[in-house]
Length: 66
Image (tube, rainbow, N blue to C red; front, side, top):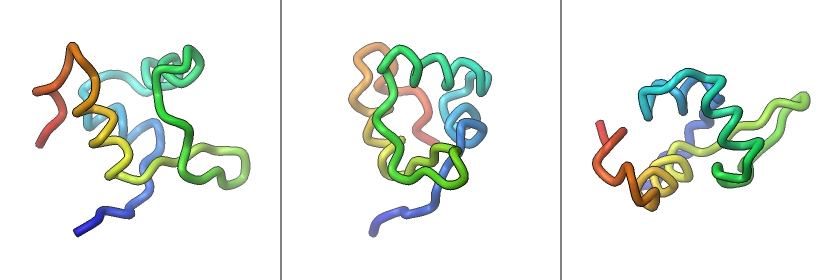
């Protein structure tokens, strides 16, 4: 089953237990996947996209898996 909920910086930050500004910095430095959707200039990612990204991060494979 796929999770197509759209997450903003805030939801991603809560998932990986960092501040939203950290997630913004990840995007700025090319460490976050491209957004799945942009609405009114704001980026959003599908929950599944974020979970796959978290799983692929070498240092944090066990983090943010709740």
